[in-house]
Image 1: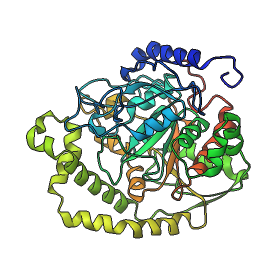
Image 2: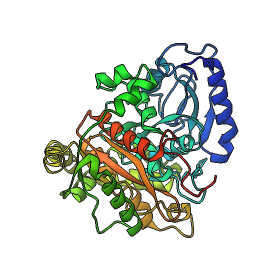
Image 3: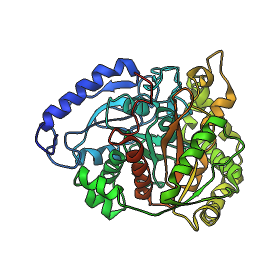
Image 4: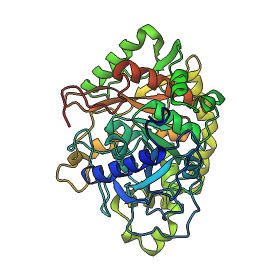
Length: 444
């Protein structure tokens, strides 16, 4: 409508701001709505588009609260470069969104404030720590959102809310102005309802793919680029004994549906447990350094989930950290040789179990089940250790009409390939509705 001049930029932005304000109480994910700028950007691929972001990005509008009450301790880290890049492309930042305290946690649990509601099913959990970003996008409050992913915190909420969740190559998107958790693992990621929308945002943030950058001048060109015919070479690691039967059935049907357009091969994934342990070692150790002052001065102010992430790092010997860091290049080379040497992509599960109820993963709930909570990030953190790009997107629904998602991984700086795969599947299965379409037989 903007391209055809059926709607002015001002009309579009005001409508989106009103939509966000109208829907925010139902989804409980907006920490603060931002005032609209006096002069709206008239140029750029995202002119007229309203976005909202996880409350971990420092901006001139406010200090990031990072899931706490009031401002976080320490000096400001400076305005977030990623948010500034989106503004340069014409986007308007509508709101700061809820998150787990200090980005610690696989759900949106937060004793300090808002705990988002899953727009697809209010009884279902919202993954974390970028929970507010996922709920806002799935609930139609904004087109896309920036989150952060240190051990799955963009991809987990994408999986629980049936969205596209892109974790790019480490440091592809600037972390300047983003409050850290574990700096060698932290990534700025993108949540969107459509892979084409995610591609448009990625282009504004500096994708290394020149063809994507050129295509970003128009939504039509983005679609053409992502939908270009391919003969996919894909390795899979999906036939696993640890998958819940209904998840396994959905993933099996998905792989079978891809057979006409892809060369598929099931492969082993050696070293998965070790890579996950390395990632956890780095996360605990680096988080304890980031939050050393709070640990020393006021540890009781930290939520239990935050303490569970931060405090173990105090006891990790420095030589462990050195060994884990030194092994990274060799582990990454072995992963490529085992999983990507003869293929462009590796497909693995996003979540091994169906999306759980909030009551099963909320630690203050009588029905809390630690196994369900641990399952949310079982297939996530090793990708952060590798530093490789990954994308999560839905490929079907379970018996309760909650999304079942797959995760695709590729070599560094190949994000366009991930987005192309997801968009071609999205268009085949959902047409132009995007991934957040209401599941069959469900009315919300």
